[in-house]
Length: 144
Figure 1 (cartoon, rainbow, N blue to C red):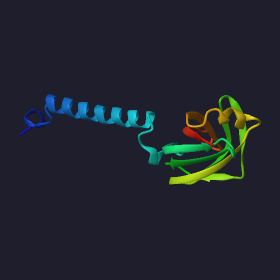
Figure 2: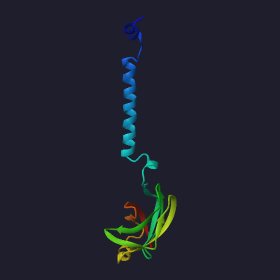
Figure 3: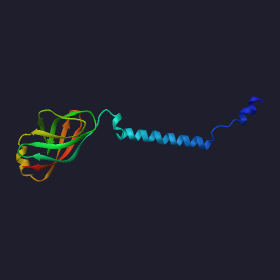
Figure 4: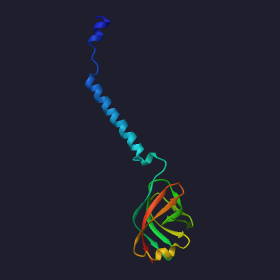
């Protein structure tokens, strides 16, 4: 048997099987790209996210925020706060550890306590500024 007839009789992958393999590979690559683009693979990214869990309270008299936060990344610290466009600081170092934990954060902002006194019982939105550059929007019920 010569080489030409041997090559002619050799069987390979059909065109349909080859096309199917290429389509499956393309779909897998697309899913991986979308997963990384939208942060679905949190374990592979360096920075996690901090989100509020449940209901928070903000005392109008002492400016003390009690909030439960969920951190999916490395520990970070609260460095500042924004309430109604007013920038403020936090007393002491509040470190947000990985997992779900409840924190008591004392806020220091000029004369915002008089404004908050009129909002007792209502829900306000405030923003916590973290040391990793992230911000967390917190909804809190104002208490007396």
